[in-house]
Length: 296
Image (cartoon, rainbow, N blue to C red; front, side, top):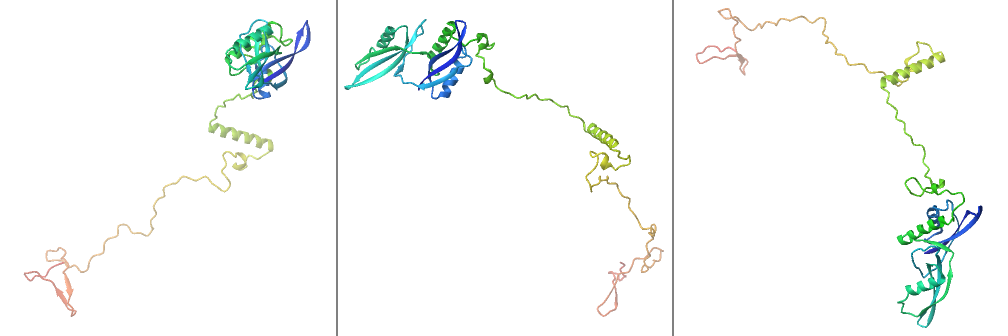
C-alpha cells in the first residue's frame, strides 16, 4: 500500500529560517509506520521531521530508473481499451523532463498487447520513494538524501557531524535514547558469625548505657543475639551416671551347706543317694546290677 507523506521543517533560505514542505512516497500500512520511516531515514538531513499528513495514493506501478542529477518524479496517466471499455491508470517514474517521462513509459510497455495511449504527464512533488523490501529503491533513497543535503535542503542549525556515531551508524535523538536505571551492584564481604555476635553485644551494651540499664540485667535484655527464646533452656551435655548399690549388701556371701550329703569312709563328701517313692508311699532305693545302691 502506497502512502504519500508531507513533512515540515525549518531551513535557512538566503540566510533566514523558513518553513519547508517536502513529500515522499512510502510502502507502508499505517500512519505510524510512515512517521517511523521519516524519523529514521530523513535523519541525515532533518533531525525532527514533522509529519503533517500520510494519505493513501493509488499507482498502477512505480517504475524504477537510476537517479540523474536534477531529475524529478513524474506522474503519467494512460488510457487502456479492454473489450470496448476504457480504463485509466497512473504511473510514477523519475525523469528529467515530461518528454523523457513519456518516452520511458512507452519503452517500458512497448510489448503490451492491448491498445493504450498516454493522456497526461505532469511533474510530481514526490522527492523520493522508500520501499523497505526493495534494495534498489533503498539505495536510490540514500543517494537522493545525499543530493538534497548537498543542495542545502536540510534543517537549520543541524550539524551533519551529529547525525552519525563514531562507527558510521545513524545517531539516535534524545527521545530515542534507551532509558536505563542505575543498576550498579555493590558486593558486600560476608562478616564471620563471631564478629557479628560480638558487634551485636557491644551495640546492645552501648544502648543499655545510654538508657541507664543496670549491669546485672538479665541476658535477655542485654543481648538478643545470645538469648534463647522465652521458655526454652540450653540443653546440657549428657554425663555418664555411676551405678548405686544397697548399703547392707554383704560382701561375697558363703554358700549354704547341703545337709543331705553324708561323708564317705575316705572322708570325701558322699554322693547323694538317689531315692524315690512307690505308689504305696514307701521309699525306693535304686541299685545297680551288683545290687549296690546307686548314688545320685
